[in-house]
Image 1 (cartoon, rainbow, N blue to C red):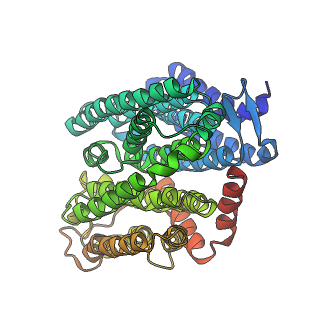
Image 2: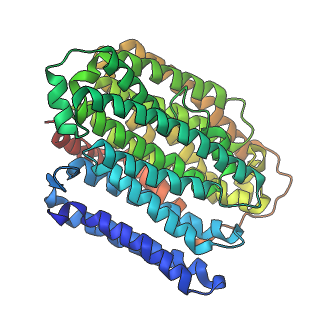
Amino acid sequence: MNYNAVFIDLLTVCLAVALVIIGLVLPRERRKAIGFIAIPSLVVILIVSFFLQGNEGITFFNGLYVSDALSTYLKQIFLVGAILVSILSLTEVDRFKDNKGEFFALIVFALSGMMILASSNDFITLYIGLELMTIAMIIMTSYQKQNIKSSEAGMKYLLLSAISSGVLLYGISLLYGLSGSLNFAEIVKHFETSEVSLGLVAAVIMILAGFGFKISAVPFHMWSPDVYEGAPTAVTAFLAVGSKAAGFAMILRVFFQALPTAFQPFITLVVVLACLTMILGNLVAIPQKNIKRMLAYSSISHAGYILLGLVAFTKMGVGSILFYLLLYIFANIGAFAAVMAVSGQSDSSEISDFAGMWKRSPFITGVLLLSLLSLAGIPPAAGFIGKFFLFRSIIQEGYIWLAFLAIAMSVVSIYYYINVIRVMLIGEAESVAEVHVPVHLKLVMILSAAMTLFMGIYPGPMLEWANNVASQFIK
C-alpha cells in the first residue's frame, strides 16, 4: 500500500485528533487559542500538498482510494476554504459560551470528510467521507445552543441529511445489485456492455437526488435558506463553499468514473435540474430581506450554473466546473466576511443593516461590492470569466437555448445584488458609528477581494491549472 496516496489526508486527520486532545488539556478560558494552532497547521498541509503533486495516479488499499490530479486539486480547494473559514471563526467563537476549541477540531474533521470524498474510488469510501463531513457540519450548524435559530437549523439539517443519505444508499444498493460491485472501475466495466434497465434508472435518479441535496439543487434545496440563516456565519460560509464543492467532487467522481456511459441518457434530467435551480434560486432571492437568506438562494442558483458543466459532459465542462469552484470560494468568503463584520456590531443580518455602509466603512463596502459583482458575473470580477466558460461549454454541445436561459437568469440576479449595493451606497443609516473590523477578518477580506480581482483580470494561470486537471482526469 502506497501511503503517499493518503499522506495529506493522514496529516489532516492527525491534526483534527490533536486539536481535540489539546482542547482537553488547555484551560477552558484559553481554548480559543486552538484556532491559532489549527490555522498555521492547515497552511502547512496546503503547502505540503503542492510538493506531493508528483505522486498522482496511485491507489491505496486495493483501489478503494485514489490520488490523482482531480483529488489533489479538490483537496487544495478544500484546504483554502477551511483556512479562510478558520480565520473567520476566530471572531465567531467569541459568541460561544463554551466548547470554543472543539469548533476548530470540527472544521478539520469536516475537511477530512471532504478529502475522503475527493479521493474515493468506491461507494463505501465515498459514503464514509460524506457522513464524516455531514455529521461535523450538523454539529457546527447547531453550535449556538442558546440560539433557537441555530438549534432549529441544526435539527432541519440533521433530518433532511438523514433522508437524503437514505435515498443515496438505496441508489447505491440498487447499483450494487445490478453490477455486483461497489468499485468504480468494476462498475464502469459492467455498464459498458449492459443496456439501460429500470433498475439503473431508479439507481441513477436516487444517487442524483442524494447528491442534489449536498449542492442545494432544486427540488432538494429546502434546507438551505433556514440553515444558512440560523447557523453561525462562519459555518454558513463553510456550507456555501465546502459542502457545495464536496458535492460536486462526488458528482465528478461517480458520473465521470463509475457511470460515464450509463449516465449519458440522463443528461436531460440534469438539464431540467439546472433550469429549475437557476430559475427558482434567482427569482426567490429577489424578495429576501435577510442577507444570509439571500446568499442562500444565490448559492442555489450558482449550483444551477455549475451543473451546466455536467450537462456539457466534456473536458471543457469539467475544467469550467473546477475553475468556478475556485473563484466561488473567494467571492463567497469575502461576502460572508463582510456580513460577519456588520452583524458583529448589530447582532443582525438584515440587508437594511448595511444602509449607508460606505460612510461607516468604505473597506467593507468595497469588499462586499466586489464579491457581489463576482457572484453576479460582472467584470472585472472573476465570476464573469467563470460563467463565460460554463456557458461556452454547453454552447459547444448544442445547448444554445440553455445558455440563453442561464444568461437571462444572471441578468435577473443582478437585481438583488444591486439592491444590496444600493442600500450600502444611498441608504440612510440609523447610526453613523464606524464599523470596527478585526485584523484577522480584514486579512480574509483583503485576500478574498484580491483573488477575486486577480482571477477576473488575469485568469490564465488558474484557468490553465483547472483545464490541465480536467485533461488528466478525463483521458
